Image (cartoon, rainbow, N blue to C red; front, side):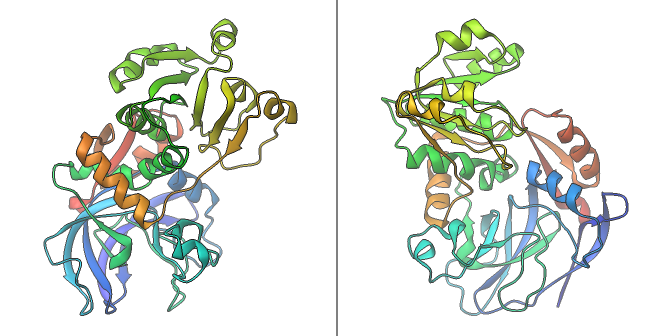
Length: 347
């Protein structure tokens, strides 16, 4: 077994502590990755809140990271030591179900193996995430990091980026599309950048009028203040696609009101139960959709698109020893727009 170091949850205090970790020896199609930068996702925060340490399953968060290959298994041909790579929130799948065969490993019928908190398909151990100095992963679930992308600012592309890319691509967003992004946070600011780069007429919907300057800087043409009834009424039936990245529970009705006839509200940010009034969908033949992560082909395409258009996340880079501070501030929405941990202090 391989030895490394990471930040593991203490179930008694809901904090992370620096802890020695064990990684598996390389299988034939594995690569070992020195983790250099790992993004801090809202999912990490939720996982920690739900973890009490009583199940005997360790929790090491982190599922959007970049680094460098340090070793390869004997069957690996795609990578060599020294290659820069990126890894997202899925590290295995069954490979044989219709979804996997379609390149949508994120919807694997046997459920994909998650980067942390998942169950390894061969030895049934709990997967430990990217808040660590080394990760061992099947080579097909790692992606070459395109030249020109800053590895720290690119790390959030592997979760936040692909999460918003998938619906934008699936809904055919392009130069003739009118897109609104609800919520200007970790997901939302990347949705704006991607929609603008796809050529869409892009707006932001926010409860915070003070985000107007940021919205324009990211390329949006306008900001609709969600708490202003007059502005919301003026934007009724205006957008072909609304990407809803709001992470807190909220009423979908006002956002469906902004969707044009035959348009779509893609609900991404809050993964809990929602209530939808049928009339909000009926009037205008509106659609409600969602998405989660992306398969291998979509993730590769997203990375190539971001490299071509110079798209990365707006980040605040912190040494990994400040991870608990980052999580506390994330819980207060005190970040514009993604924390990324520098893992080099684990050496």
